[in-house]
Image (cartoon, rainbow, N blue to C red; front, top):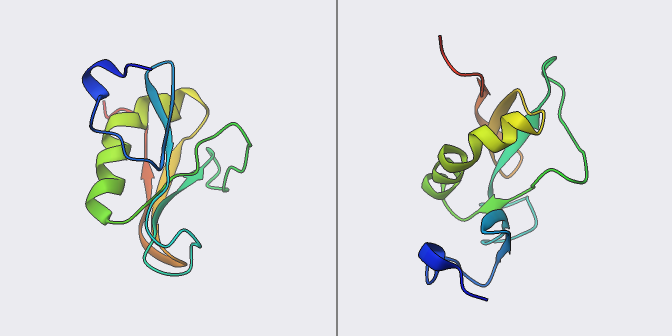
Length: 102
């Protein structure tokens, strides 16, 4: 499968569908150590757990933030209103709205 401009940028932990990065998992993988993850929130600030939403984990804060920068509009369209950044079980920051500023 050719990934076009993504060729060579995606590691073994990534899942690609129709040219879009659906999920990426790297690092410790158990959520208790150094993994950086986005907690997806609905409009009332409650965590979303829908099976069709991505649940990626990243080895660095920078990679997690880059992912959100690229995917925020798709997450918003999927019903995500805000996000929290977590490292393991620790809240780093959030909630941060995905709504466009006016």
